[in-house]
Amino acid sequence: MKKTVRTILSIIAVTAISSTLIFSASHTENPNENETTTSSPHLHSIPSKIDFAGEAAPLHLTDVKERFDREMIVNTNLHGSTILTMKRADRYFPVIEPILAKNGIPDDFKYLCVIESALANAVSPAGASGFWQIMKGTGKDYGLVIDETIDERYDLVKATEAACKYFNDAKAKFGSWTLVAASYNRGMAGMTRAMDSQYVTDYYDLFLNQETSRYVFRILALKEIMSNSEKYGFNVPKNETYKPIKMKKVAVDYDITDLPLFAKEQGINYKLLKLYNPWLVNTSLKPKGKTYYIEIPTQGIK
Image (cartoon, rainbow, N blue to C red; front, side, top):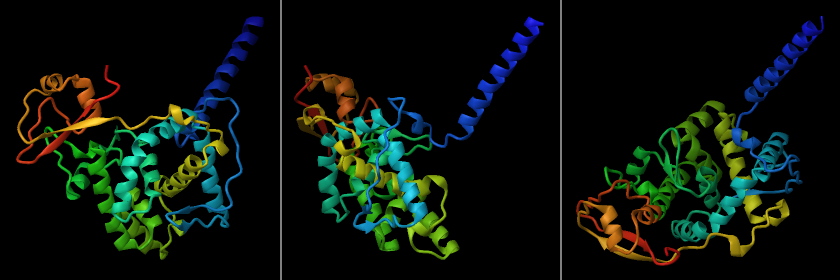
């Protein structure tokens, strides 16, 4: 009898655990939402107003306020990734910001880059690559070289220039920077179809797939958190952020058949060559009549 009772209790316990796991999995839309470093989540009041590129989000609308609140809760509790992004920002925002300004793109678009890649050369399952997560076809359309030895999606300067071209094209089409940002996720054609079929012209009025529906709110959340980091509990000392690396540029307009040997001749190793020139995607380089500038670090290498 005792054995039977123990067996029944064991079955109940296993069933309860299994049910919990199934429920958790079926209700976790974003696995990163559970990436916390404390058992008790940080909760903060959201600001009474927020804008993207000068276009105010209508927080007086219940669904808009709650969607923004969701992204604030999620991202204020993604402690590790948010801190890393803040540390990287001191190295990469000084590269991105002047390119945006030169092309007439609002500074807030740097936070679009943040949510796309966390300021790293990421690769998505669909093949979108680099800081700006550009697809191969789109990259070529906007003038990036992508071939067997070069992939300029991984060149932050050139990829940012390409992203700016897209933003300006989308702004000419939609007239709203918020819609421009949303279209970077959904595509211009996709946004146009959604607007036409729903008879609305405002991002905040559209019913969209979950990713695009959350997209602008993620940008708004990262803008708010990174602009007011201490308010949200992220006290990252300036002396611990990642600073720009001093480089020298070597002009190359000739084929290099052995990049590891080239690196050695420059006084570094292949690891460092790849780290600071991720657009070199092979062990050789074929410029094909163009001049490329390879960056060689001159500090922190020995």
